[in-house]
Length: 95
Image (cartoon, rainbow, N blue to C red; front, side, top):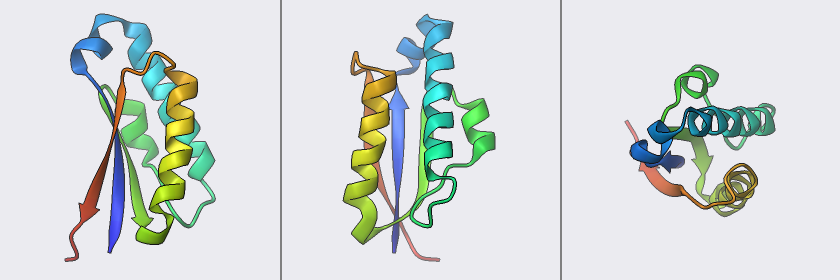
């Protein structure tokens, strides 16, 4: 069983300023690069390039979830110190 983390920004906040969308995509690129060689999580760079209000970190094992979540929160706070982002957990159902 695996988990995904979803980083979300209010669409109203994101669309109010183009700089927010740019910063949100920068966050996605930082997360992508951070997890690039990781066996514990990954991001789809095509999704990052198109992101407007959500980013998804995929395929996190349960025993790694807390650590990965802390790492994502660290990057979120760096890029958006004004705390306008939300981090959600999504349990992936087996096929």
